[in-house]
Image (cartoon, rainbow, N blue to C red; front, side, top):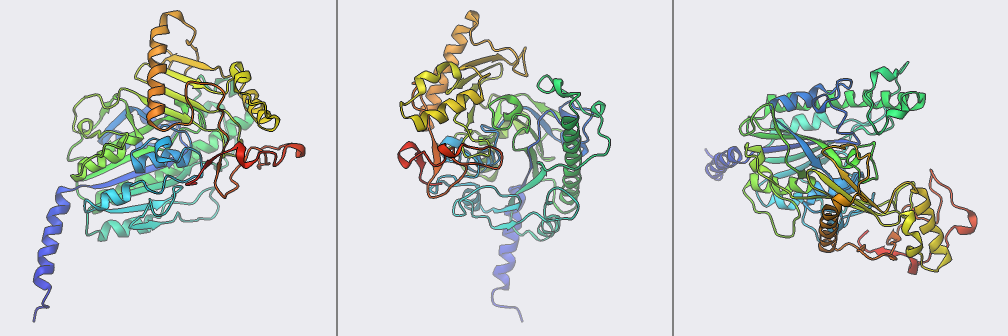
Length: 475
Protein backbone atom coordinates (compact mmCIF):
# COMPACT_ATOMS: atom_id res chain seq x y z
CA UNK A 1 0.00 0.00 0.00
CA UNK A 2 1.38 3.40 -0.97
CA UNK A 3 1.97 6.04 1.66
CA UNK A 4 -0.62 8.78 1.23
CA UNK A 5 2.11 11.32 0.33
CA UNK A 6 4.16 9.08 -1.96
CA UNK A 7 2.58 10.38 -5.16
CA UNK A 8 3.12 14.01 -4.25
CA UNK A 9 6.66 13.20 -3.03
CA UNK A 10 7.46 11.55 -6.35
CA UNK A 11 6.09 14.54 -8.23
CA UNK A 12 8.11 16.90 -6.05
CA UNK A 13 11.26 14.90 -6.74
CA UNK A 14 10.74 15.06 -10.50
CA UNK A 15 9.95 18.77 -10.30
CA UNK A 16 13.09 19.35 -8.24
CA UNK A 17 15.23 17.44 -10.73
CA UNK A 18 13.86 19.56 -13.55
CA UNK A 19 14.52 22.71 -11.50
CA UNK A 20 18.04 21.56 -10.72
CA UNK A 21 18.83 20.77 -14.36
CA UNK A 22 18.04 24.36 -15.35
CA UNK A 23 19.90 25.93 -12.43
CA UNK A 24 23.59 25.04 -12.39
CA UNK A 25 25.48 24.03 -9.31
CA UNK A 26 28.05 26.69 -8.43
CA UNK A 27 31.41 26.02 -6.77
CA UNK A 28 33.74 28.86 -5.83
CA UNK A 29 37.19 27.76 -4.63
CA UNK A 30 39.04 30.55 -2.81
CA UNK A 31 42.72 30.29 -1.92
CA UNK A 32 44.30 32.50 0.74
CA UNK A 33 47.09 35.08 0.19
CA UNK A 34 48.47 34.09 -3.24
CA UNK A 35 49.87 36.51 -5.82
CA UNK A 36 48.32 36.49 -9.28
CA UNK A 37 51.87 36.23 -10.62
CA UNK A 38 52.39 32.84 -8.98
CA UNK A 39 50.56 30.49 -11.33
CA UNK A 40 51.69 28.64 -14.40
CA UNK A 41 48.66 29.87 -16.34
CA UNK A 42 49.56 33.47 -15.41
CA UNK A 43 53.12 33.11 -16.67
CA UNK A 44 55.16 31.74 -13.77
CA UNK A 45 56.91 28.61 -15.04
CA UNK A 46 58.65 27.96 -11.72
CA UNK A 47 55.64 27.44 -9.48
CA UNK A 48 53.58 24.23 -9.57
CA UNK A 49 49.88 24.96 -10.12
CA UNK A 50 48.68 22.06 -12.31
CA UNK A 51 45.10 22.13 -11.00
CA UNK A 52 44.54 25.82 -11.71
CA UNK A 53 46.34 25.47 -15.04
CA UNK A 54 43.96 22.62 -15.87
CA UNK A 55 40.98 24.84 -15.09
CA UNK A 56 42.36 27.53 -17.39
CA UNK A 57 42.68 25.02 -20.25
CA UNK A 58 39.15 23.75 -19.66
CA UNK A 59 37.61 27.18 -19.13
CA UNK A 60 38.25 30.94 -19.13
CA UNK A 61 41.13 32.85 -17.57
CA UNK A 62 40.58 36.48 -16.56
CA UNK A 63 43.57 38.82 -16.77
CA UNK A 64 42.00 41.88 -15.13
CA UNK A 65 40.20 40.64 -12.01
CA UNK A 66 40.36 42.67 -8.78
CA UNK A 67 39.45 42.87 -5.15
CA UNK A 68 39.07 46.29 -3.51
CA UNK A 69 41.09 45.42 -0.45
CA UNK A 70 44.17 43.28 0.04
CA UNK A 71 43.00 41.89 3.38
CA UNK A 72 41.14 38.64 4.09
CA UNK A 73 37.83 39.70 5.67
CA UNK A 74 37.14 42.82 3.53
CA UNK A 75 38.01 40.91 0.37
CA UNK A 76 35.63 38.04 1.16
CA UNK A 77 32.83 40.37 2.19
CA UNK A 78 32.69 41.76 -1.35
CA UNK A 79 32.26 38.31 -2.89
CA UNK A 80 29.42 37.51 -0.52
CA UNK A 81 27.56 40.86 -0.69
CA UNK A 82 28.23 42.36 -4.13
CA UNK A 83 29.24 45.58 -2.36
CA UNK A 84 32.56 47.34 -1.83
CA UNK A 85 34.01 47.26 1.71
CA UNK A 86 33.05 50.81 2.67
CA UNK A 87 29.43 50.18 1.71
CA UNK A 88 29.10 46.72 3.22
CA UNK A 89 30.87 47.90 6.39
CA UNK A 90 33.79 45.46 6.52
CA UNK A 91 36.75 47.66 5.59
CA UNK A 92 39.17 46.63 8.34
CA UNK A 93 40.37 43.12 9.03
CA UNK A 94 38.58 40.91 11.56
CA UNK A 95 35.51 43.16 11.46
CA UNK A 96 31.86 42.59 10.59
CA UNK A 97 29.67 43.69 7.73
CA UNK A 98 26.59 45.78 8.52
CA UNK A 99 23.86 43.68 10.18
CA UNK A 100 21.10 44.73 7.77
CA UNK A 101 22.91 43.61 4.60
CA UNK A 102 21.50 40.77 2.54
CA UNK A 103 24.29 38.41 1.55
CA UNK A 104 24.70 35.48 -0.82
CA UNK A 105 23.13 33.11 1.70
CA UNK A 106 19.70 34.72 1.81
CA UNK A 107 19.70 35.86 -1.81
CA UNK A 108 20.52 32.45 -3.26
CA UNK A 109 18.21 30.59 -0.85
CA UNK A 110 15.30 32.62 -2.21
CA UNK A 111 16.15 31.25 -5.66
CA UNK A 112 16.01 27.64 -4.51
CA UNK A 113 19.68 27.08 -3.72
CA UNK A 114 21.43 25.61 -0.73
CA UNK A 115 24.39 27.79 0.21
CA UNK A 116 27.35 26.00 1.75
CA UNK A 117 30.68 27.03 3.27
CA UNK A 118 33.47 24.45 3.31
CA UNK A 119 36.55 25.77 5.10
CA UNK A 120 37.72 29.13 6.40
CA UNK A 121 35.00 31.67 7.15
CA UNK A 122 36.56 34.98 8.29
CA UNK A 123 33.23 36.80 7.85
CA UNK A 124 30.59 37.89 10.35
CA UNK A 125 27.94 38.37 11.72
CA UNK A 126 26.21 35.01 11.56
CA UNK A 127 22.82 36.58 10.86
CA UNK A 128 24.20 38.00 7.60
CA UNK A 129 26.08 34.81 6.66
CA UNK A 130 23.48 32.17 7.45
CA UNK A 131 24.92 29.10 5.72
CA UNK A 132 22.71 26.06 5.13
CA UNK A 133 25.75 23.96 5.93
CA UNK A 134 29.20 25.00 7.18
CA UNK A 135 32.16 22.70 7.71
CA UNK A 136 35.31 23.77 9.49
CA UNK A 137 38.82 23.19 8.09
CA UNK A 138 40.34 19.84 9.07
CA UNK A 139 43.51 19.77 11.22
CA UNK A 140 46.35 17.48 10.15
CA UNK A 141 49.68 16.72 11.76
CA UNK A 142 53.05 17.97 10.54
CA UNK A 143 51.63 20.54 8.13
CA UNK A 144 51.46 24.32 8.60
CA UNK A 145 47.73 24.81 7.89
CA UNK A 146 44.41 22.97 8.20
CA UNK A 147 42.90 21.33 5.12
CA UNK A 148 39.56 21.73 3.38
CA UNK A 149 36.89 19.23 4.54
CA UNK A 150 37.08 16.89 1.53
CA UNK A 151 35.01 14.08 3.06
CA UNK A 152 32.11 16.43 3.76
CA UNK A 153 32.39 17.93 0.28
CA UNK A 154 32.34 14.50 -1.39
CA UNK A 155 29.38 13.31 0.65
CA UNK A 156 27.48 16.46 -0.19
CA UNK A 157 28.18 16.08 -3.91
CA UNK A 158 26.79 12.54 -3.73
CA UNK A 159 23.64 13.42 -1.83
CA UNK A 160 22.64 16.98 -2.84
CA UNK A 161 18.94 17.18 -3.68
CA UNK A 162 18.82 20.85 -4.64
CA UNK A 163 21.00 23.14 -6.74
CA UNK A 164 23.75 24.48 -4.53
CA UNK A 165 26.23 27.31 -4.25
CA UNK A 166 29.32 26.11 -2.39
CA UNK A 167 32.28 28.21 -1.31
CA UNK A 168 35.36 26.06 -0.69
CA UNK A 169 37.71 28.32 1.22
CA UNK A 170 41.23 27.04 1.67
CA UNK A 171 43.71 28.13 4.34
CA UNK A 172 46.55 27.64 1.85
CA UNK A 173 48.99 29.02 0.88
CA UNK A 174 48.69 31.59 3.71
CA UNK A 175 51.67 31.46 6.11
CA UNK A 176 52.97 29.74 8.15
CA UNK A 177 54.61 28.00 5.17
CA UNK A 178 56.23 24.63 4.74
CA UNK A 179 59.96 24.42 5.40
CA UNK A 180 62.02 23.54 2.35
CA UNK A 181 65.48 22.00 2.57
CA UNK A 182 68.26 23.84 0.70
CA UNK A 183 66.08 26.53 -0.90
CA UNK A 184 67.54 27.96 -4.09
CA UNK A 185 66.87 31.39 -5.57
CA UNK A 186 67.07 29.81 -9.03
CA UNK A 187 63.85 27.96 -8.26
CA UNK A 188 61.98 31.21 -7.59
CA UNK A 189 60.64 33.64 -10.18
CA UNK A 190 61.42 37.24 -9.26
CA UNK A 191 59.68 40.42 -10.36
CA UNK A 192 60.55 44.14 -10.24
CA UNK A 193 58.97 44.44 -6.77
CA UNK A 194 61.22 41.74 -5.24
CA UNK A 195 64.18 41.49 -7.61
CA UNK A 196 66.49 43.02 -5.00
CA UNK A 197 65.92 40.08 -2.62
CA UNK A 198 67.51 37.37 -4.74
CA UNK A 199 70.46 37.18 -2.37
CA UNK A 200 68.37 37.45 0.79
CA UNK A 201 68.52 33.92 2.19
CA UNK A 202 65.60 34.40 4.59
CA UNK A 203 63.42 35.77 1.81
CA UNK A 204 64.36 32.92 -0.54
CA UNK A 205 63.63 30.33 2.17
CA UNK A 206 60.25 31.90 2.88
CA UNK A 207 59.41 32.08 -0.82
CA UNK A 208 60.37 28.44 -1.31
CA UNK A 209 58.04 27.47 1.53
CA UNK A 210 55.31 29.60 -0.03
CA UNK A 211 55.76 27.80 -3.37
CA UNK A 212 55.53 24.48 -1.53
CA UNK A 213 52.29 25.60 0.15
CA UNK A 214 50.90 26.60 -3.26
CA UNK A 215 51.67 23.12 -4.56
CA UNK A 216 49.93 21.62 -1.54
CA UNK A 217 46.80 23.64 -2.21
CA UNK A 218 46.80 22.42 -5.79
CA UNK A 219 46.56 18.84 -4.54
CA UNK A 220 43.36 19.88 -2.76
CA UNK A 221 41.97 21.65 -5.84
CA UNK A 222 42.74 18.60 -7.98
CA UNK A 223 40.78 16.37 -5.61
CA UNK A 224 37.81 18.73 -5.65
CA UNK A 225 37.87 18.82 -9.46
CA UNK A 226 37.94 15.04 -9.60
CA UNK A 227 34.99 14.83 -7.21
CA UNK A 228 33.14 17.43 -9.26
CA UNK A 229 33.67 15.49 -12.48
CA UNK A 230 32.70 12.21 -10.82
CA UNK A 231 29.52 13.27 -9.06
CA UNK A 232 28.17 16.40 -10.81
CA UNK A 233 27.03 17.01 -14.37
CA UNK A 234 28.35 19.46 -16.93
CA UNK A 235 25.93 22.13 -15.77
CA UNK A 236 28.32 23.07 -12.95
CA UNK A 237 30.12 26.40 -12.79
CA UNK A 238 33.50 26.08 -11.08
CA UNK A 239 35.40 29.28 -10.25
CA UNK A 240 38.87 29.50 -8.75
CA UNK A 241 40.36 32.64 -7.19
CA UNK A 242 42.63 33.80 -4.35
CA UNK A 243 41.44 36.51 -2.00
CA UNK A 244 44.38 38.89 -2.60
CA UNK A 245 48.09 38.99 -3.27
CA UNK A 246 50.41 38.41 -0.34
CA UNK A 247 53.22 40.58 -1.78
CA UNK A 248 50.94 43.62 -1.76
CA UNK A 249 48.92 42.85 1.34
CA UNK A 250 47.42 45.95 3.01
CA UNK A 251 48.26 48.11 -0.05
CA UNK A 252 46.30 49.36 -3.07
CA UNK A 253 48.97 48.29 -5.55
CA UNK A 254 48.11 45.69 -8.17
CA UNK A 255 50.39 43.20 -6.45
CA UNK A 256 47.79 43.19 -3.67
CA UNK A 257 44.50 43.92 -5.46
CA UNK A 258 44.83 42.01 -8.72
CA UNK A 259 43.60 38.45 -8.26
CA UNK A 260 43.60 35.21 -10.24
CA UNK A 261 40.16 34.34 -11.57
CA UNK A 262 39.50 31.21 -13.62
CA UNK A 263 36.07 29.84 -14.51
CA UNK A 264 35.00 26.49 -15.98
CA UNK A 265 31.46 25.69 -17.06
CA UNK A 266 31.60 23.13 -19.83
CA UNK A 267 27.99 23.73 -20.85
CA UNK A 268 28.68 27.44 -21.43
CA UNK A 269 32.34 28.52 -21.39
CA UNK A 270 34.62 27.94 -24.35
CA UNK A 271 37.72 25.96 -23.29
CA UNK A 272 41.11 27.68 -23.21
CA UNK A 273 39.57 31.14 -23.56
CA UNK A 274 40.66 34.46 -22.05
CA UNK A 275 38.94 37.67 -21.02
CA UNK A 276 40.80 40.95 -20.58
CA UNK A 277 37.75 42.88 -19.36
CA UNK A 278 37.85 44.60 -15.97
CA UNK A 279 35.98 42.48 -13.44
CA UNK A 280 35.71 42.72 -9.69
CA UNK A 281 34.81 40.64 -6.65
CA UNK A 282 31.61 42.68 -6.32
CA UNK A 283 30.58 41.14 -9.67
CA UNK A 284 30.50 37.60 -8.28
CA UNK A 285 27.15 37.71 -6.48
CA UNK A 286 25.34 39.57 -9.30
CA UNK A 287 26.63 36.88 -11.68
CA UNK A 288 25.33 34.09 -9.45
CA UNK A 289 21.96 35.81 -9.16
CA UNK A 290 21.55 36.13 -12.92
CA UNK A 291 22.64 32.55 -13.48
CA UNK A 292 20.12 31.36 -10.89
CA UNK A 293 17.28 33.35 -12.46
CA UNK A 294 17.22 36.21 -9.98
CA UNK A 295 17.70 39.96 -10.28
CA UNK A 296 20.50 42.27 -9.22
CA UNK A 297 19.32 45.00 -6.88
CA UNK A 298 20.25 48.66 -7.32
CA UNK A 299 22.12 48.84 -4.01
CA UNK A 300 24.75 46.37 -5.22
CA UNK A 301 28.00 47.71 -6.68
CA UNK A 302 28.78 44.79 -8.97
CA UNK A 303 27.56 43.68 -12.38
CA UNK A 304 26.97 40.24 -13.81
CA UNK A 305 29.82 38.81 -15.89
CA UNK A 306 27.58 36.15 -17.42
CA UNK A 307 27.98 37.72 -20.90
CA UNK A 308 31.75 37.17 -20.63
CA UNK A 309 31.26 33.56 -19.59
CA UNK A 310 29.09 33.09 -22.67
CA UNK A 311 31.86 34.46 -24.89
CA UNK A 312 30.64 38.02 -25.41
CA UNK A 313 33.58 40.44 -25.14
CA UNK A 314 31.71 43.36 -23.59
CA UNK A 315 32.81 45.92 -20.96
CA UNK A 316 31.63 45.16 -17.43
CA UNK A 317 33.24 47.97 -15.38
CA UNK A 318 34.65 51.31 -16.47
CA UNK A 319 36.62 51.48 -13.22
CA UNK A 320 37.55 49.31 -10.29
CA UNK A 321 38.37 50.86 -6.91
CA UNK A 322 40.64 50.13 -3.98
CA UNK A 323 40.60 50.84 -0.25
CA UNK A 324 43.49 50.76 2.20
CA UNK A 325 42.96 50.71 5.95
CA UNK A 326 46.07 50.17 8.02
CA UNK A 327 44.25 50.19 11.35
CA UNK A 328 42.99 47.19 13.31
CA UNK A 329 45.93 45.11 12.08
CA UNK A 330 49.09 43.94 13.83
CA UNK A 331 51.16 46.78 12.36
CA UNK A 332 48.43 49.37 12.86
CA UNK A 333 49.17 52.91 11.70
CA UNK A 334 47.16 55.86 10.41
CA UNK A 335 47.74 55.78 6.66
CA UNK A 336 44.51 55.44 4.65
CA UNK A 337 44.54 55.30 0.84
CA UNK A 338 42.01 55.11 -1.97
CA UNK A 339 42.50 53.97 -5.56
CA UNK A 340 40.70 54.21 -8.90
CA UNK A 341 41.79 52.24 -11.96
CA UNK A 342 40.67 51.68 -15.52
CA UNK A 343 42.35 49.31 -17.98
CA UNK A 344 45.33 51.61 -18.49
CA UNK A 345 45.67 54.29 -15.81
CA UNK A 346 45.61 54.12 -12.05
CA UNK A 347 45.37 56.95 -9.52
CA UNK A 348 46.13 56.57 -5.80
CA UNK A 349 45.69 59.12 -3.04
CA UNK A 350 47.55 58.56 0.22
CA UNK A 351 45.67 60.83 2.61
CA UNK A 352 48.31 60.97 5.35
CA UNK A 353 51.41 61.27 3.19
CA UNK A 354 54.34 63.11 4.76
CA UNK A 355 53.99 66.03 2.37
CA UNK A 356 50.50 66.87 3.73
CA UNK A 357 51.14 65.87 7.33
CA UNK A 358 50.98 69.39 8.79
CA UNK A 359 47.52 69.91 7.31
CA UNK A 360 46.29 66.74 9.02
CA UNK A 361 47.39 67.62 12.54
CA UNK A 362 44.67 68.38 15.07
CA UNK A 363 46.49 70.27 17.83
CA UNK A 364 45.79 67.40 20.24
CA UNK A 365 49.19 66.00 21.16
CA UNK A 366 47.97 62.47 21.87
CA UNK A 367 46.23 62.23 18.49
CA UNK A 368 48.94 64.05 16.53
CA UNK A 369 51.61 61.64 17.77
CA UNK A 370 49.86 58.77 15.99
CA UNK A 371 49.12 60.81 12.86
CA UNK A 372 52.82 61.70 12.65
CA UNK A 373 53.79 58.11 13.35
CA UNK A 374 51.66 56.88 10.41
CA UNK A 375 53.05 59.46 7.99
CA UNK A 376 56.62 58.67 8.95
CA UNK A 377 56.08 54.92 8.77
CA UNK A 378 55.20 55.28 5.07
CA UNK A 379 57.47 58.23 4.32
CA UNK A 380 58.34 56.93 0.84
CA UNK A 381 54.72 57.05 -0.35
CA UNK A 382 53.65 60.38 -1.90
CA UNK A 383 50.30 62.12 -1.60
CA UNK A 384 49.39 61.31 -5.20
CA UNK A 385 50.38 58.43 -7.47
CA UNK A 386 49.54 57.93 -11.13
CA UNK A 387 50.63 54.96 -13.21
CA UNK A 388 50.41 54.02 -16.86
CA UNK A 389 49.78 50.31 -16.37
CA UNK A 390 50.08 49.55 -20.06
CA UNK A 391 53.75 50.56 -20.02
CA UNK A 392 54.45 50.14 -16.30
CA UNK A 393 52.45 47.16 -14.96
CA UNK A 394 54.42 46.96 -11.72
CA UNK A 395 53.82 50.64 -10.85
CA UNK A 396 57.45 51.73 -10.72
CA UNK A 397 57.26 55.20 -12.31
CA UNK A 398 54.93 57.67 -10.62
CA UNK A 399 53.53 60.04 -13.27
CA UNK A 400 51.40 62.19 -10.95
CA UNK A 401 53.42 65.31 -11.73
CA UNK A 402 53.62 64.72 -15.48
CA UNK A 403 51.92 67.74 -17.14
CA UNK A 404 51.00 65.68 -20.19
CA UNK A 405 48.76 63.52 -18.01
CA UNK A 406 47.15 66.36 -16.06
CA UNK A 407 43.72 65.94 -17.66
CA UNK A 408 43.76 62.17 -17.06
CA UNK A 409 44.75 62.68 -13.43
CA UNK A 410 42.05 65.28 -12.85
CA UNK A 411 39.39 63.03 -14.40
CA UNK A 412 40.42 60.05 -12.26
CA UNK A 413 40.62 62.19 -9.12
CA UNK A 414 37.17 63.65 -9.67
CA UNK A 415 35.62 60.25 -10.39
CA UNK A 416 37.32 58.73 -7.35
CA UNK A 417 35.74 61.27 -5.00
CA UNK A 418 32.33 60.81 -6.61
CA UNK A 419 32.64 57.09 -5.88
CA UNK A 420 33.86 57.68 -2.33
CA UNK A 421 30.85 59.86 -1.59
CA UNK A 422 28.50 57.22 -3.00
CA UNK A 423 30.12 54.67 -0.67
CA UNK A 424 29.61 56.78 2.45
CA UNK A 425 33.36 57.18 2.91
CA UNK A 426 34.51 59.16 5.96
CA UNK A 427 37.36 60.56 3.83
CA UNK A 428 36.89 63.27 1.23
CA UNK A 429 38.96 65.71 -0.82
CA UNK A 430 39.65 67.91 2.21
CA UNK A 431 42.66 67.34 4.46
CA UNK A 432 42.58 67.38 8.23
CA UNK A 433 40.15 64.56 9.01
CA UNK A 434 42.42 61.60 9.65
CA UNK A 435 40.20 58.81 10.98
CA UNK A 436 41.09 56.80 14.06
CA UNK A 437 38.81 53.79 13.93
CA UNK A 438 37.98 51.23 16.57
CA UNK A 439 35.39 48.48 16.99
CA UNK A 440 32.70 49.26 19.55
CA UNK A 441 33.19 47.33 22.77
CA UNK A 442 36.19 45.40 21.49
CA UNK A 443 39.89 46.00 21.83
CA UNK A 444 40.95 45.03 18.34
CA UNK A 445 44.44 46.27 17.52
CA UNK A 446 44.33 49.81 18.85
CA UNK A 447 46.88 52.44 17.96
CA UNK A 448 47.83 53.24 21.56
CA UNK A 449 48.46 49.65 22.63
CA UNK A 450 51.13 47.05 21.93
CA UNK A 451 50.55 44.31 19.40
CA UNK A 452 52.72 41.21 18.92
CA UNK A 453 54.62 43.01 16.14
CA UNK A 454 54.91 46.61 17.36
CA UNK A 455 55.52 48.38 20.65
CA UNK A 456 54.15 51.65 22.01
CA UNK A 457 55.95 53.68 24.66
CA UNK A 458 54.39 53.29 28.08
CA UNK A 459 53.81 57.05 28.29
CA UNK A 460 51.57 56.85 25.19
CA UNK A 461 49.57 53.76 26.02
CA UNK A 462 45.85 54.28 26.51
CA UNK A 463 46.13 58.00 25.77
CA UNK A 464 43.47 57.98 23.03
CA UNK A 465 40.00 58.58 24.39
CA UNK A 466 36.55 57.66 23.12
CA UNK A 467 36.18 61.15 21.65
CA UNK A 468 39.32 60.65 19.55
CA UNK A 469 37.89 57.66 17.70
CA UNK A 470 35.37 57.12 14.96
CA UNK A 471 33.28 54.37 16.54
CA UNK A 472 32.12 51.79 13.99
CA UNK A 473 29.00 50.67 15.84
CA UNK A 474 28.25 47.46 13.96
CA UNK A 475 31.73 46.05 14.63
